[in-house]
Image 1: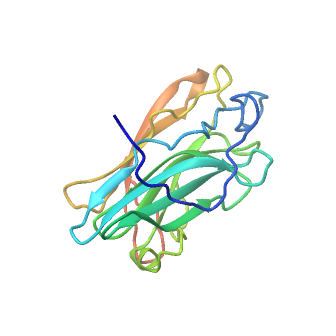
Image 2: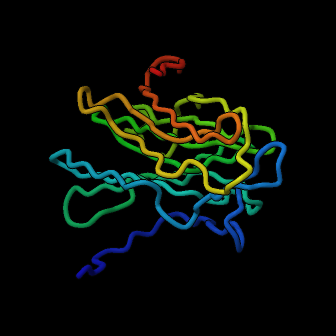
Image 3: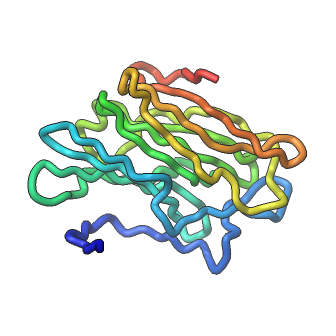
Length: 212
């Protein structure tokens, strides 16, 4: 038996993309992809750092009431007693939709966020962003890492509206720093392909640092 012991208030958000599961636009087709906005994506990450505990999670939201998808993310913290919201933000830096997010906090106080991207001018692809240790210390809800591209999409998906299911971001236990992201992209002839990539959050000018 599970009983709710606490309810945490978060900034208001809109998760209504309409009455169906066709939400994310693509180039050259009327087929739209499912934003899956109703649920927290992947598994929220819990960590115990001894003097405090953290939980990070994310979900898809409509950022402007026109079905532009962005990623709302949260960091919860518990030092003693109950949990509280330490920081939160919505990542949507331009007119392209971002969804199917997965978020993690590493042992260097850095946050990584991987996701899918698509719009009427950008084919479904894979990108990531993150938060540096200095921005994490401020706790202002800003992902200050310049967005980087893992896979540039070249095709739209026309047969189905589900794309990128089961995307997952993990922290490498070998260094508690490197992020590994696994998700789907679309190949020729509607082939569903998987891409696995790693990245780190650097303190210098962000540069592509992917390991195929």
